[in-house]
Image (cartoon, rainbow, N blue to C red; front, side, top):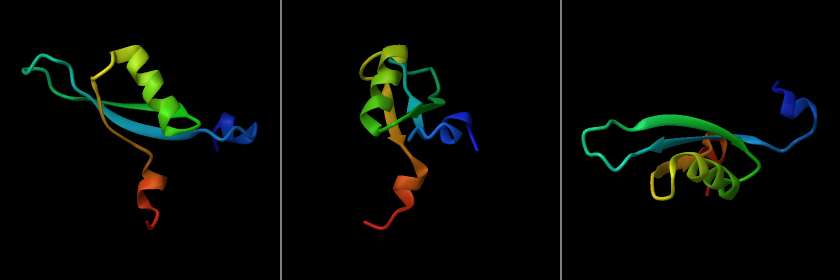
Length: 66
């Protein structure tokens, strides 16, 4: 159990692939803790720049039936 879970925060682990604009650079796999998808995207765009974040998801949410 993470510290955030013990303290009652509703954060989830989000995974993403960051693609830089240079075609010879491989994608960078990253993780971020956030309360929701929008917050996760904002955190990643702040660090890596807008337009570089792809395949952002939370595995628990993705596994739920639709």
